[in-house]
Image (cartoon, rainbow, N blue to C red; front, side, top):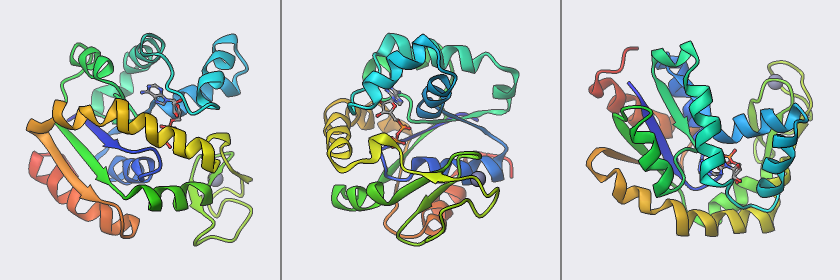
Length: 209
Ligand code: ADP
Ligand code: ZN
């Protein structure tokens, strides 16, 4: 089973993906994480990716598709994949047709004001990638691995607003693109509340638990 997660940046795709991964044995592929890994490695490619991301712009399709295609050849993907943050453009969705069969697209719905509020509160563990919010977690270190928590450069308010604009213009056409296999869920509630209907939906699709 392969699924994609659609939703604005900061709508909770990563959090939901991690829950699905745990229950259904799928592999999460986040293009944002792939890019940040490349940046952390200090490569020339990483510098190029960072220049787009820091401005809240999308990485060009050709580059994104190339990096995604390399990741998908790894053997762990045979278990099935959750695409998190990919595709983000119609061109990427067209390219994905030749890469994997998509069983379903889960659309996470959240008002933009709430996204802004959550985004500026988001912190990420520098060691294990766990996501926290200053709205409900006061610690400076990860509760799981004690890694230091940090705020992503692109989680600043101006950048968040830019990314939402890009999402509206470039990514929302994908809602039509996948209308024949779309499952919509609101993430206004807790992560658990968001996950429950998705879990039932995926079980219905024949996902193994
Ligand atoms: P979020 O989960 O908040 O949406 P991501 O980690 O998915 O953030 O993405 C961070 C940045 O990485 C994006 O703003 C964009 O610059 C770049 N990026 C990630 N995925 C893609 C993609 N599929 N196409 C183009 N750029 C991407
Ligand atoms: Zn951690």
